[in-house]
Length: 131
View 1 (cartoon, rainbow, N blue to C red):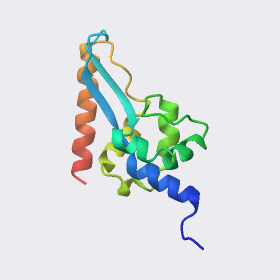
View 2: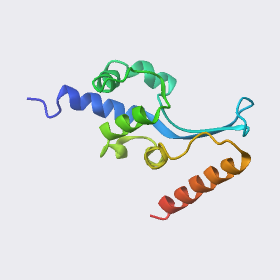
View 3: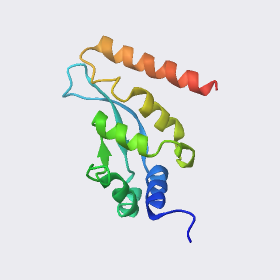
């Protein structure tokens, strides 16, 4: 009898292949000049490699399997699915960052909002780097 069930293997594939974090980039289409949002994504190679396994895990929660997730409710569901498996991911700090800021950082309306979001991110990263 296998130690891991098929569902367990799908969760391991999901937890090890996704990337997560807060995306910050210049944007001409945004009033503040910046796009800042929490995201979960699959790198190009991983997306095709884990489509059958990680895709099934995500779809079991009623979420379509895509390359990128930006909606707070979908991100929350995915992060809850992989809770406790962060250590098998290449970037566990990215997962922690996504978990901390999902739903808390919205697209900034002004440059002041941009500075506030970046300051929050910087303080968070400093606090977890000291642990």
